[in-house]
Every structure is written in structure tokens, then in C-alpha cells.
Picture 1 (cartoon, rainbow, N blue to C red):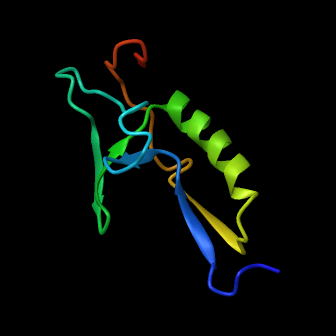
Picture 2 (cartoon, rainbow, N blue to C red):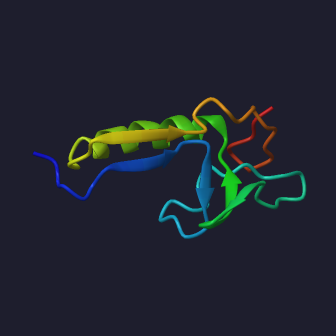
Length: 94
């Protein structure tokens, strides 16, 4: 039976925060080399992930979510963010 206090997790597959252990892997970089900001939320400034990194993180997260006593998963921004050009060396995206 799920933990009575764990209701859901919020999985953001198109964005990342600086306090993430995965930062800055996969972050879209602008032509100046700066990380591309997304929305600013209660957690702080979010940054946009490139689509390849988003899929990699989604696969990783789904594998790990199976071990948690969850009742729901809110998959946020999975298809809401458009593709962006990225100048990240080795992860260029047009």
C-alpha cells in the first residue's frame, strides 16, 4: 500500500533547476554560451533542456519512479515546450 502522505511527484521533462544533481547536463545554450532560461517558479529559475536530454532524463526518471510508493505522477511540460536551437558543444541542436 502506498505511503499515506505521498500523493504524487512532479516530473518536469523539459526543464531543469541549478540545484539539480544533473545540472547543467543537457541544458540548451544560447549563442553566447549562457543557459537558456525557462519560467521562474517558486523553486526559482528553471532552464530549458534540449530534446535529447529530455528523453534521457524521462527514461531515467520513469525507471526510478517505479520504486516509489506513488499514487500519481504529473508529467509537466513533456510536450508543451517547443524545440530550441542550442549551441552547447557536443550537444548542438537546430
